[in-house]
Image (cartoon, rainbow, N blue to C red; front, top):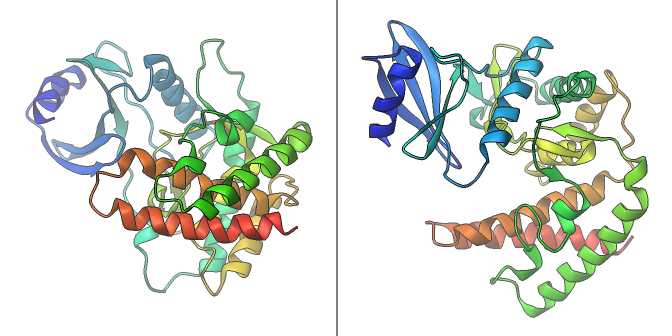
Length: 309
């Protein structure tokens, strides 16, 4: 990876910069320090996104930033391009955002309820800004729609076929998928749908004082706005203050734009199920088996609750 970084630096006139790997999830993200200025350089996982999808992501982030929401902004290279291909690897450079990941904050002083209310409002502003954008015809992103979530080939895998599922769980997950598919098919025309970040977990929400910053639009695309909200809530569902966090997030969102939360419990269960599929391609990683079991247990509980309604 370092060789690609070294080749990329001159494209952005960053020759001689120092750099360090700061994230290695779907993409490798390097913090670049050049003459006192910091930027983020991303090496994208090969085959994960097309050039058109990445160009669309970068243009979208630029529009969101212009709408007053703090997100990384794409930095054009000397040639004016925001995306370069180096030895088959897609490379781009973004502005660096300082602050602390929401997931890393373990103690007060900060008001979790107020934080979730502000996050809800920021989400709503993201959606409003995205809806107001007259997208270019070449815009291309994946869809977290009925097929993307519950179809034969979901974006994050066929969760009902996770190899760690017991037979009872396989049957339960299939029943859940059938009922959830029927419900979404019936209600989808009435649901708020458009561009969403799709991964607003604590690792992708950064706080700089009271300013909420959204990073990592890699999974962003078209989807249900309740799916966006469920993503932010899911990891907190067992927390003692979860009911207050849920109310705060919806209150913040509703202060900017209307949202009908009727199907939120369904989307929480669907969102949980996506992780059961997501982990399947990563079972060779350290600790993946334990993570898979946690995802399965949580989804079992949420699916069982939904099927009982």
